[in-house]
Image 1 (cartoon, rainbow, N blue to C red):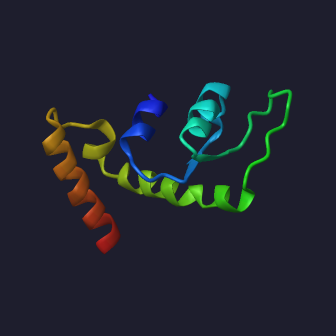
Image 2: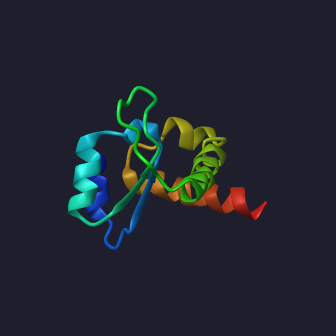
Amino acid sequence: MAEECVSLIPGIQELLADKGYDTDAIRAFLKERGIKPVIEGKSNRKKKIRHDKKAYKNRNVVERCFCRLKDFRRIATRYDKLAQNFFSALCFAATLAYWI
């Protein structure tokens, strides 16, 4: 699923991801497209892979954003059946969360 999502967004130069995305297949896919993977290696990986630690620290901004949005029960459980309604609720929650 990660490959499909990345291919939908043009102009990506770096991909910040957590250890769950540390696979050789994803890394090869990113290399084909000229995208620099900023993914920390799993602890059970035999060959350690270097990553940009400074850029990796910025990943928490995205994590905090999702955490803040999931404070809204409607977003966390996805009450809305239609994507358009869910997106509207998401926009409203984001506006409310960062306006207050």
